[in-house]
Amino acid sequence: MTEAITSSSTPVDSVRPGRAPGNTGHKSILSANLHKPLANDSSIPARTADDDGTIVTAEKFLASVDELSALVAGLNNRRSRERSNDFYATAEVYELLEDDPGARLDALWRILRVSGINNIALLLQQLKALFPDVSDRLVALRQMLRQRNLAETERELIEQAIATLIESENPKHLKSGINVALKARLFGKALNLSPAIIRESYRHFIESDETEREIYLHWVLMFGGSRRHMVINFMESAVLADMNASDPGCSAAEFGDLLGRLTQIKIIRSSDHLFIKCASNDQFIGQFAISEDQWLLFLLPLLKAGDLLYQQLEQLAGGVIMRQPTRRKVSFVQKIFKLIAAFPAQIYDCCDQQEILHQHFITLIDHGYSQEMVENRGY
Image (cartoon, rainbow, N blue to C red; front, side, top):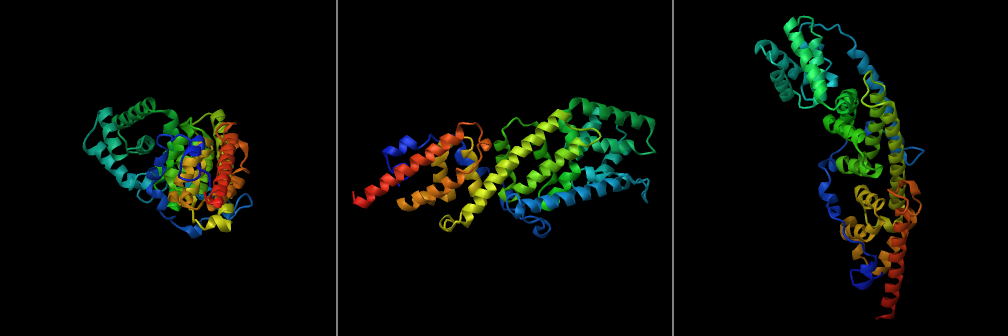
């Protein structure tokens, strides 16, 4: 191809971007979640009119999650339990994402009663050991207040602990963690992932000032490309649950902005989904057996910096593309350029990056043709 596309010399430097620090570390950042199987593939939907069956499938699953959330919420409102004196039996453990939440609540109850704790700091210290997440700690304290047989001193201590916790923590972080806990539990089971990690990703999303592309890339790295449709649907479902909660984590204006950001992320997702589908169906490109995650890690950085094109091609599929003969490299670059040229301008980080990326493609293709002509002459 060209010297920019071949491993050789001078023209390469004219089109080859400087290597951005840390960019080569994408693969090492990938979580083990990339290779972790879904809990039940058969329960997770299949095709959409939007992109491909995967997106519609995810939306069908989202509807079933919402129905189940409503059912569980209704069950939680039923306070008549057989063992009414047992704290574990009356606790709304669905809102607690720790393993064995009922046992932890019983342990907390015993600490309060048996140890005779009368110090707020000590109670909060014991509470944190049992429930590391601040939202879980607040839910646990509120559950304790619901006990009918509390002594007045115990009630006052718990109320003071609640007030201290609320005053010392980020309100958005605290409230949102409670409001989306059930969604995180349900999606976590379906995706075979930790509900606590999914909840923390929601908090990161609502508190982040990163671009939509950066947030989306974070989800791909964290959960794997195959789960990105479900993760986006979780985030949308969680925003709505948080927004409709009795004590929302954000203001109405902030929720509007979050829904707008999700719309932008879905446009990026639709674009890369269509690209990957077309590339996979192309007989020539298909020969290289490039995985969905490899395509995503190739594409998403280019939406921020078009001058990374050469570097991204070098890394794509372990460098197999750049080891091809010139003609095959040129053909490959031409084909993916045609697909990328169809991307809407709005998915790029800034307005000039689309033109920069296109120009780098054109330069690589031109140099490739020149290199091929030289090779054909036998020079």
